[in-house]
Image (cartoon, rainbow, N blue to C red; front, side, top):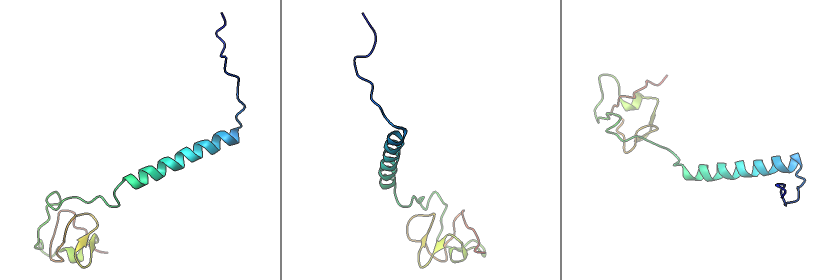
Length: 91
């Protein structure tokens, strides 16, 4: 008895193989891109956020603050007079 495959060999060109791989990679990127949230922010408690400044450090002078009341890193409503442990002075 022979162990050879009974399936006839198929001629697949390198171009077809690369085209198929590109289509699979592109499809995977679309699926992953739509499954992830637009922004992943941390809770205020995790950032040690407080609604009062710490010395001369306040959210309004932080590089992460987005006027009028949000932050690129911390979730929720952010006071311009607030502060968190990720304060980074605007340059």
